Image 1 (tube, helix red, strand yellow):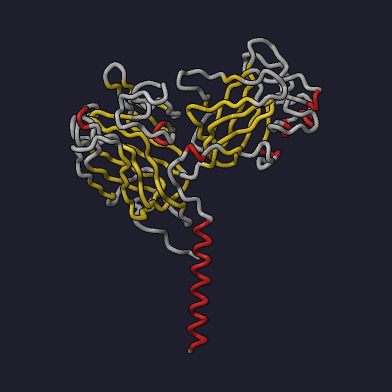
Image 2 (cartoon, helix red, strand yellow; image 1 turned 180 degrees about the vertical axis):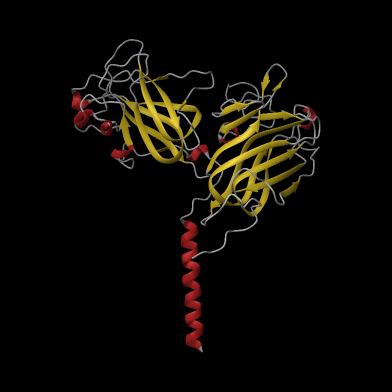
Length: 395
């Protein structure tokens, strides 16, 4: 009897160990922390393999091919050098395939030192990027709409450009740029972190202008406009920058209200009473624990946390039937501080989430939206629309 109990206990411990090991290897989606998203992604270290680095051309593939475009590495010719001179035409590029979506917060560049013999460097460059769901490459630009980034002034110094806005991409291209025809070479490092949340895109109503000074649109959104909605992109709701209590402050010099996306209750067809409708698309079917929304509550200016939220789930993205998760928030007319509101999602299953937020006052303003979730293994069909159960075990 004792031996049997011991064997059963050992079996249970082994089973628990395997479960914990399995869970530990899952990528759990959490909110973006920009302070921890400043890691070299592997050009210098070699974590990015040669096959992940390609180019439009090379002057000599063996000596100055794309595989040599590694920051602080001086092998063979010492850098990537395109076959043709560059100018304003943006025809030559270096491409890095990160294999999965990353957040890219900075780019570092050098010229070709070539053991002291190099003379070529890249004075300026333009970035394009791609991720799953895109139908074409997207040109990066800063908050002021400027596309051209300053590069190097010699062959050896390292220049870092902090990207504002940040980039969500699985592939990036750097296009050397020059006002005049010029021979260039380039070494590079991408800086950032893995995008663990698994969010591919969100679709929201266009944010609106409040008065003459406060722009509450999603100014960094990289999707497209379809009527009065933004579709197929990511932007300020996931950029890791939380807005201040007073939405009228200009924290970083990008304009008043920059960190906030906002809607007025009379801007939707059908008049007052209609909710803000948002759809979030993920990389795969996931098990959702919670949703976190950073919201404004400056009620003296007619802004308040949403009074109610409904969250619908879908595997295929076409049908959001079934019972939604319902959440109610008690209006706070005492404290005007911005706050994180957590909506528990009770381990519901889906690849698409449709979120309805109902107005408490005239305005709803959001700064960040994030989800806690893990990928779910299994065979799913688009007919599984209610998000309430796992598929049958076919093993």
